[in-house]
Length: 110
Image 1 (tube, rainbow, N blue to C red):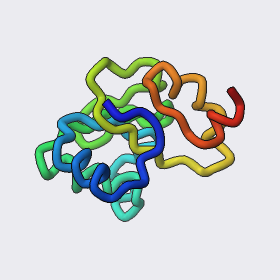
Image 2 (image 1 turned 45 degrees about the vertical axis):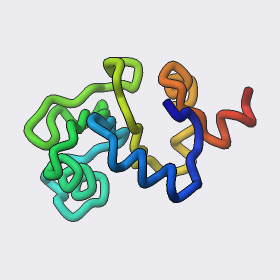
Image 3 (image 1 turned 60 degrees about the vertical axis):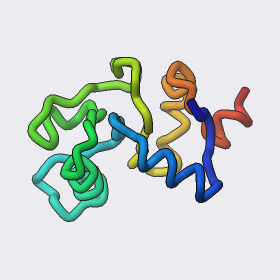
């Protein structure tokens, strides 16, 4: 498992090729189908990858119930895709740590 920020193109390709389950923090529902936080997860789900939405304001996305918090995610998440404004990410870093996800901002807070 790779934890942290991946910037190497070969590693990114390997992750994308091998991912089976992703969580999408900030997922949107089909009321705004052109929003990146809906269209991107929909495209990924269409390729056969399991998508778990996380957004306390959205009850269902892509035909599945969403979770209210990262802390509710099951084990086995390959990728956490974040669709949040940069100023809102700090509120999630403590939850991210339980998944082994570290942002540059989270590392600076440690």
